[in-house]
Image (tube, rainbow, N blue to C red; front, top):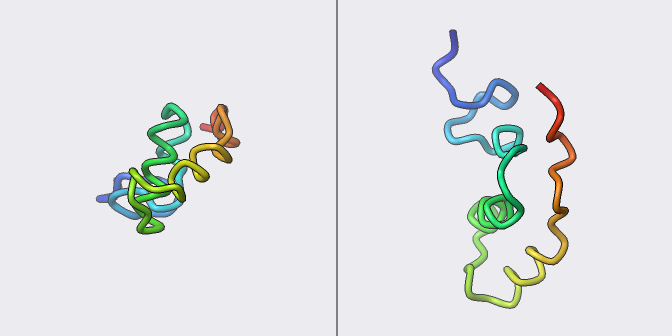
Amino acid sequence: MSLSDCPKCWDTPCSCGYEYRKSPRLARAKHAATILGIAEDSAEFEYLLSITPEAHPMKDLE
């Protein structure tokens, strides 16, 4: 049993994105913005949201 949230990167909270694979697109964009230091009310965030895919690439992995 591990003491971390993510079974892939072992970080708490997850920094690799695996734990966010079932999250909606907006939540994944917010997670990426937090990691990258981008404000949610900026043009950079709007761009990040526009390039975030609807379905996470690892959504069906378990």
